[in-house]
Amino acid sequence: MKKICINSRDELVIIDLDAVACIKAAGNYSTFVYADGRELTLTVGLARIENIIATYFDARAASSGFVRLGRSCIINSSMLSKIDMLRCQLTLSAGSGKEQRLAVPKKILRQYKDLVDAQFERLKQSPQS
Image: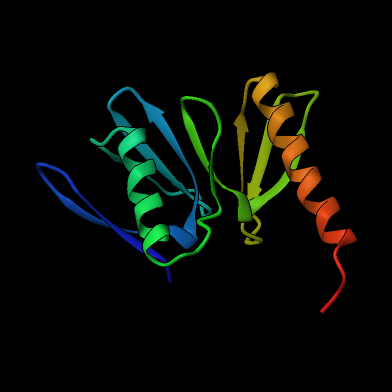
């Protein structure tokens, strides 16, 4: 389990990153949206959350799987199940039947779609070990 600790002025919260579908910004607040639909809002900005996650994974020399999409959202790319360019949204799912749909600006969504597509193309072309 990948867990981070977020300590703010009034509370200390332990977050299980494996269960987080995305993190949304709302001014100086961040809302963690879990795959099962639960939400947790903290008085911590998205930039600080991004730094905490990066520090956690840098210390372990691992890839986080969390991707920042624009100014207001970080997604758990391991839960990505669909990118819909026509509706300008992406769908995150942990396989539990619940889905989280996020509206994303078209330009950002196009860039992310191209990145994901390129990653899968590289996997197809790499020799199997």
